[in-house]
Image (cartoon, rainbow, N blue to C red; front, side):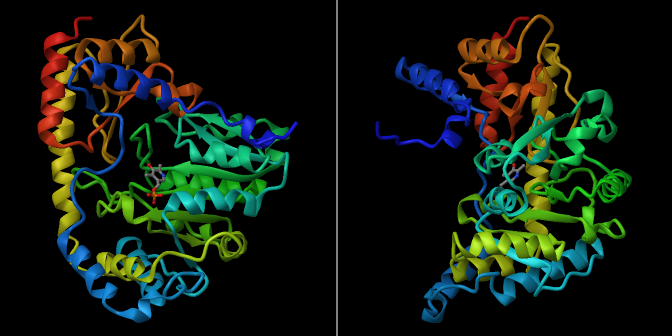
Length: 389
Ligand SMILES: *Cc1c(COP(=O)(O)O)cnc(C)c1O
């Protein structure tokens, strides 16, 4: 019989958001005004000066040709400048910076670049689903590292079984975290790098929310750890920092051997991002940065309003220092799925069950603050009015 699906694909579990989307469609059909707090995608526009730079670059026909595989010079230099400015980390734009078609693309392609079938990849649980799915697509074995609240949502490296560690070829970390909104300080990265060097397991740190921070918190880079470049790379993105999710532009920096391996996969898969987008992204990194503080202030106001509303119905959540997510415990007696369904049915508000990000997300739900303030306030009013626990 003809097959239309590889065995590899059979391993990919059904999309967990599909069930929620089905229910959303049903409720909308029955006339309910559904508010979706599930999506992590900035509602605010890309700042105008960045859009104008894109338009300017679009008027130069030299920019219409195939881009350089590693990214254009301007973009790689802008990323290196950003690392010097933000973290006092020196990067060689030629060998230690690679442009990506969004960091998701680089994360997914790094895995087949680094592992062979049956090798383990160490993955935080809960986490961004791409780490696990791309591992399965590469015929690798995900080993989930539980992130527990009592450990500040940090993995306990000593809990990783010896036999797994021996066959582990890559470890993912993500701070500020999605979905947990957890943050770390440099000593955690020092500990991670020491562990990685001791066990020879390279680290890929996903720093998508590095600039979405509040109250003076400054998220560290893993590359600030001495010797980190020997064993680690860091992924970054323009998506969340400058409201550029649809533009598809990100980067990976650090260990040059890992970047070289990733370049080989990329060179045989894609041909880089459209040059005007790269040049506008370089401009975003190098021009006035006040837009970041402006966006963060908006997220912070939304966050405080949501936390107050949750408190009135008896739900306590930690106030995040970064990211645009609230990661809250479901009330006693509910599973994540039960509680999310109850909110949806009683209020028409969609929040994400913690289990969508891994089994250790059980007991939690995620609220995204990347929705217009007016809609968020409406959701808050409905929750305060209708949810009786
Ligand atoms: C949004 C997000 C990304 C992907 O960002 P892109 O650069 O738009 O691909 C990566 N990791 C995490 C944790 C994210 O939330």
